[in-house]
Amino acid sequence: MAVNGVSHQKTIQDIINATENKAKERNTGNGLGKDDFLRLLITQLTHQDPMNPVDDKEFIAQMAQFSALEQMQNMSSDFSQIKAFSMIGKTVTASVINKGTNAKELVHGIVESVTIENGKSVLSVNGKDVPVDSIISVEDESITYNYEDISKYAGLIGHKVEGILYDSSTSDMIGVAGVLKEIQRGIYENYGVLDGVSVNVAAINTEHPSTDPDFRTNYLNSNIGQKVNLIISDGKGTEVPVTGILNCFNVEDSGRITAVLDGVQISVDSIYKIKERPDSINEDTAGEGGEAG
Image (cartoon, rainbow, N blue to C red; front, top):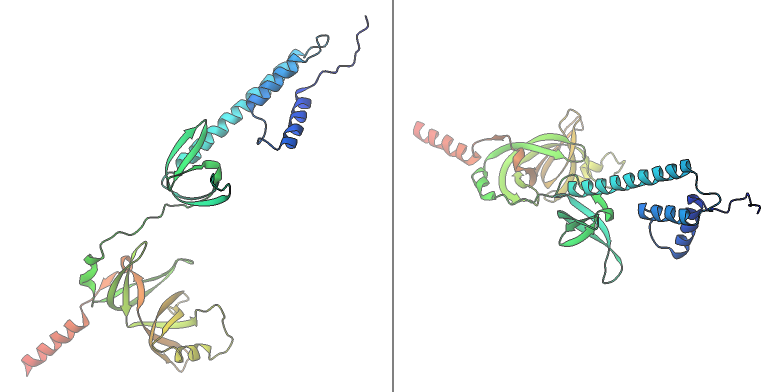
């Protein structure tokens, strides 16, 4: 009997292509895994032409492909777990499906723990289970809230202090001085509120700058005793934004504008010099004058 020389045996690639086409029609699954690959290999061997079996070299090559696929999937799983455990204590945002409404929702919070379920890493965020693959952003550091007791700073109130105004967007800093009137607790740090802060006005901090040469002067004139947003300079090229109550201002012949602000906030941790209370200096001076009389 003559044997047809044309082989109708399917290759793994043929089976993969057919399976992928069916998967697209069903719209299920995310791709072929190592188990699918092994089933495809078994299917090929089961349906091979007994008169033209799979060549040993081809079989070995396919097993090598299977082994490589398995190793890649194991590496992917290990990497996923490493990534998940590295997020513990960090603040993340995830997009998850609400099982009740079947709608997407954002979960934001600190990763409290990690569990491995069926080889998949699941994070616990605000008491909710969040798959690691659903994470869309990770903050460099977890948010640390400020619970410091501000009463320990009470002794500084009324003293003249020097500290730093800091621009977080540029990391520029300018030293300022004023009388510490109060301490305020912030979400992340504590602030000292200074009165009598002398500044050099470089510009008005506004979203709508003006080309009018008198814009700064007109703005300051109309905001005496009001909260103002300014850009101040140290006279050496460094500029930072500041907000405060405009006490007074002065325009020099050179065009340089200086102002005195009240209610200026600086970080308590930035205070680097503390002087005697102004009223205690006046009392000492008055006492010395009385004795001399």
